[in-house]
Image 1 (tube, rainbow, N blue to C red):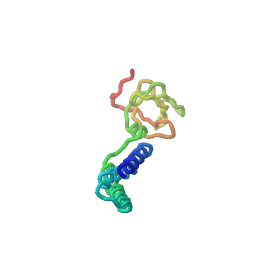
Image 2: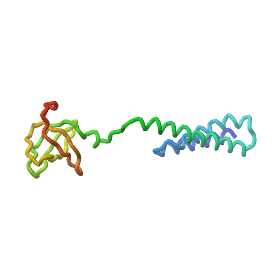
Image 3: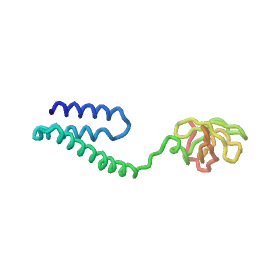
Image 4: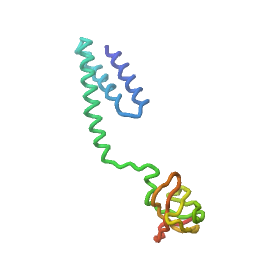
Length: 147
């Protein structure tokens, strides 16, 4: 019976690797526990019942604990990380015409917030994102150097 529970643990472990969520690992842990418990418990129904209790308890308790712990962190996507960042103009931003800016070593298409001309080499601050363009304003602080 231990080999069957080992097989169940391996199947759930492989299935966990193929999914993005943290759910199937608990069933794998439950099966590992049954490898040892099946040495003293011979009744298959009781083994399956214990496997279900261990696995579902871990699923609900441990997953809830991990999710609660994970909620304390704020994740920035690439776009969110660009907001309020400083950069410099690589290609003039003209009135009603986008230009190019470099923010965090990445080149972006950008438009001016006030629809004003911002010349090449000027420092800018990212205010928001519209579609695939950054909306920038001229920054008074010389915190970014053009290469």
